[in-house]
Image (cartoon, rainbow over all chains, first blue to last red; front, side, top):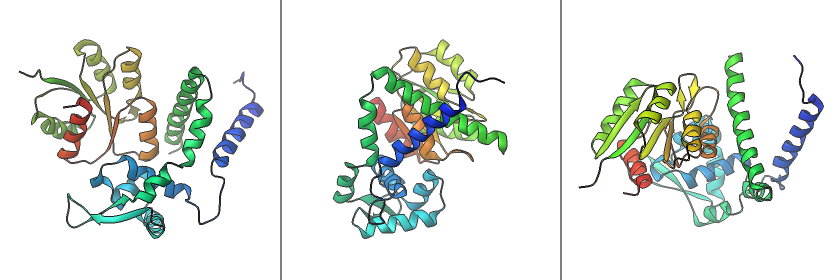
Length: 147
Length: 127
């Protein structure tokens, strides 16, 4: 099978994509919010309160509870999240963003990437989103093939 | 009298489809249920317009992105709620991201309670 697009060019584009994503997380030391912790903050921001339990967060992120528990404990220790009584189920506690957590989200590194993409013409922004979506769906099919 | 809102429900699991239909039937909604992609696309073209679509993301081995694309391609502003419990190959964070890109207004993680669904539906329909 022949390909019109050169393999080297495809690899180069992934190198740039990888650098682009890596560069939006400039600080790598442990005192900074780490990618998993960002995912947890984003989850707490978008989901209704009754869904903000460890089990739902872990399910959403495709992880076991242990890493989510550790990441949440770190976020709580730094004042970004807090545990509170679950209004829907007295046996459990939910996790909520504190004012500091809400403020941190305004500096979410992903927003930096969004600012860059926003500089593209609108058609290219749509093209970018559709391409990323297609890659995600194709990756899922590829996983199916190898299962 | 307020007209009944018409909702397209696409869910491949017959039990979940039944439960969601029961949840929604407690409100003045008309439910048009479909079990797969082709039935959903057929109902979209013959029974629309809909006030809301509730789509399970994974329909067996297929996904419901093409239903979202069909709705958008028609220039139709029907709001869409995507529901999913995930699958073995894609976590819900990625599934929700794909739903967002595709224009879904709400993503609900399965399983959910009746109140969660009804709150989402009424917020989308601005009731």
